[in-house]
Image (tube, rainbow, N blue to C red; front, side):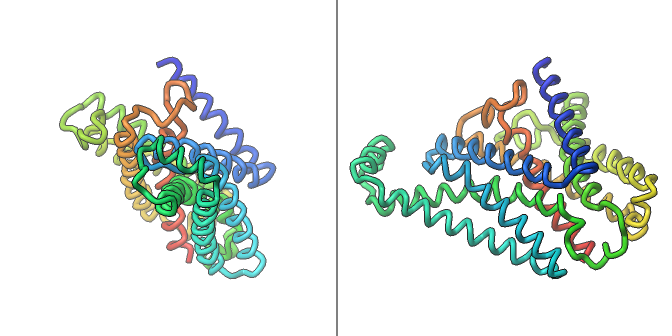
Length: 321
């Protein structure tokens, strides 16, 4: 328990440091932070896939997120300089193209390896009845899974971090650092939900939510997590609303809209947690790794944030456009 508390405290300090750097220095510190997390999460995802029998290329899964991060930053720069919001969509399409190219590169790398090396790996994996072409193709497809989850989805945080740089109609003339508000929202929704779901579930108990997937989660905890998340998110909104520089944004973004986003977001965060539990069940492991003492792997900590990154970005884009 002490290890868990110490790790949680360390994570809180790291987040505070990066928020301070974002406010007073540059957004790019958070970009680097997200990129590093995505690369390590790709490493853990590759390991999980291998344990489920989905053999893949560890190096590709680990380093490919760097290309996606670079593409996202270039897309944001293009959107800002051309004042064309469609660059958000173009960048997403470019990311998908990079994922396909990464899959092709993985296939070619596997196919053109020394035949002796390929046959040895196939023998170790017990797939001798498979052709080299089919084996290389399956390995490339499995690697692409790690390109999408967690890398592609998690790195949507880059767009959230640079939300102010996007040419969005409703934000014109607002003058607030909207990206800071949205980034805080994206971090606090999973934190509020996970923390209060655990507390509520331990106090009330009751029927299990998904006993075959995650035996520790209860329906009462899930509902409690959502309700407390909405309540504390309202406090976050009011705190930002009391800051003069954010008043113009709060005038065009009502609290009821924010609470709807946090309510749905809390459900999405729990879906992300359950999705990670399914992966670990299939891999027959308790944790995705040993990145954080008392917490397990990095994926165990950001599983909710991965889904939230996509949801929060889409929700605020719909509002701002």
